[in-house]
Length: 170
Length: 198
Image: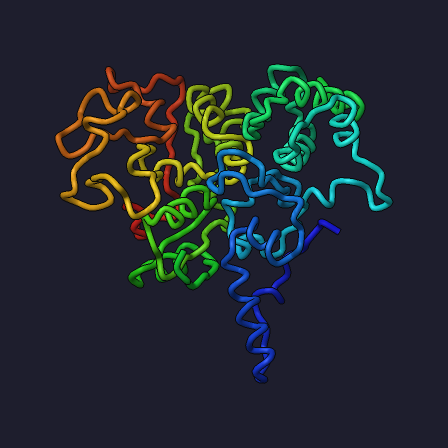
């Protein structure tokens, strides 16, 4: 759960009866939604949060083919054929927490929790990109994820720790 | 947002043909267009996705020339080893923009085409103040308003806004020579016929 593959069938649905036409229309309209709206309103994946809705806060961060992106700045239609990973897909299939999630808990890296799904998804990618080598690089490369509760020191520590555990710290 | 049709361009000719129809706009990364639509700056009837043409996002060195396709993302340019070494001002400027998430989508061509970041311009319609860019003749709220980060030179009574591209920062305004050791040729490689200006 949490890994979507947007297939061409979301875009085209050939049928002649009325009920299918209605499904066609909502499937077609869904393509015009932003990713974040589709995920939350249609796919039932409400882990991804909508913060600023303009690409500044990072609360809506998801992975598109393993690259982190703001889901508020993409139409669903632009993801055709891509693998979309949300926060729901970060933990293992057996429910085992990802090292980033474990580190966030151990380092108390959230207060209200609203930015946290975006922080975690972004951190997973940040580490994979090789940008979690030291505190300065984490602060710079995680700067697209805002936290109004100011848990930045704890978030930074968690990301560094998770990178170290994964052997991805420079 | 109003309803719109969405199409994916198969190539530059396809995109150019689609753009010939009125009310059509292109989208590559989407980091600008979606905001324009939400704020009421534009309301296209049809959007053509040109972001799949990855061959137009290549970064290539031929001798002393670095050619960067218009669809190269800011992260791709900023982290490209040749760009970092031989066109470091450009690479650094790219990595200073926005955030990692935006930079994975935002293209160099789109960056040049971005609209100004003036807060009065970037407000949701209907605007409670004058903005000559949004409504010609309505006035410029930035002129006598909060304009610390607006233009120092070159402003007129009509507008005080600046151009926001990373490339604007890399041009040396005092000299006609490039400050890099190799000449950077940044081309909108999808061709001149697409009406990329706004």
